[in-house]
Amino acid sequence: MTSILQFADIHFGVEDTAALAQLEAVIDRLQPDVSVISGDITQSGSEEEFEAAAKWLGGLPGPKIICPGNHDTPMYGIIDRVVRPFDRYSDYIDPHDDGEFMDDNVVIQSMNTARGVQMKLDWSVGVVDMDELEQIITRFHQAGPDRLRFLNVHHPFVYPPEAPLQKETDNGPEALARLADANCDAVLSGHVHIPFVVEREPGGSELLSVSAGTLSTRRRGNDAAFNHIVVDADEIAIRMVSFDGTEFLDSEMFRKRRDELSEWRRGAGAMRKEAVVLDTQG
Image (cartoon, rainbow, N blue to C red):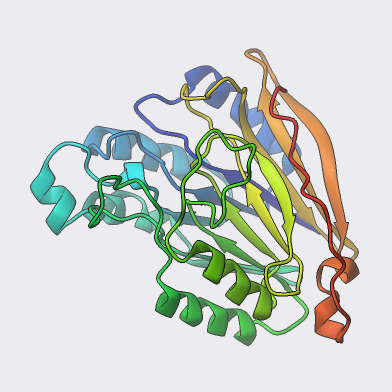
């Protein structure tokens, strides 16, 4: 069995201090094999925020797979944002990032979908570099066919209708289709500050989109939350763990049999499934 914690949008600078204070005990209970952080670790990309984030990451047990978000570039200082948007991220966060996690059940890789500046008014929009995606797919294939393949990003490739943000990630639909063709099993993301699981069939093969909530005060009407993902020989199970202001509580669990999720690897077609959105009210 593999126990995975998925965090996103901690936004150090406006982090939920009460939730973070209670988190250590929950982590001890869940016994993670790996922690995945899906971007927006800081609020404004300041050095002080990155120092706090690095201290928190250093306290998490086990390996960590991390990607930046759009808030992890300097909010103030246009020159830094243009010329060296991820220098502070690299200095403070990269030392805590294991780059890849692989065990008998799963392989996890990260991809940066955030940009410092873009040729558009909204610099927060996600971008998928299709050439970089092909390199990740190659590494997935090298891991063999028996492990589930998870890609960690910040921006959802396609936003579900229930998301409080409705934007379009550049190359997002094409990237989902390519990942399905390449037998990827799940895209882990953040950015929208609500947890959800959506079963997709972009290329005739089923693929999960899994988003974590936020551990910041920017909750958009929802509880602070993170995801607990468990993968074993039979299934993948995903549960939102939300903070009610006093303690963390488990939500209902989404379950999917591995032979259903990965059935195209045996030459069978994937069945069409409906979207499943996790209860975000705690």
